[in-house]
Length: 169
Image (cartoon, rainbow, N blue to C red):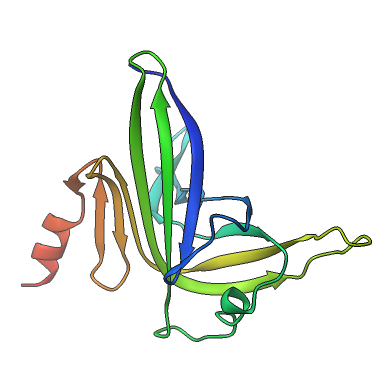
């Protein structure tokens, strides 16, 4: 087991580098939807995981940028590509690692900045309606979600492969 510390993150929205604008980076929280299962005559309830909950995330940029803001209001199919790059450092081994998260989704919200004098506020962008999600560390797939193809990969293992094969018969 190693200890890794995040030493920075950067977003690209479409092909636009946000490095000099970023106030805060936020990746989607990963959660499972559950359904409560109680057996007949059972004394216990069990939260049965059913599917991965819809993903959403927030990016906060200093100032106001029409090249990002103009991504708001689009419909499914007119996707926005978000790419997150992260540098982590293993402090036990003094070694750097790269993480890349690629998201295809929509910009579903814009919270405009509050200005005090000449001090710029941050504009908060809500990303969601995630169609595809890919999380890799040093090229190894940690998670892959693809709504269209019904693909769920966890730690390099295709969780949905067998189910998709059975349903395709």
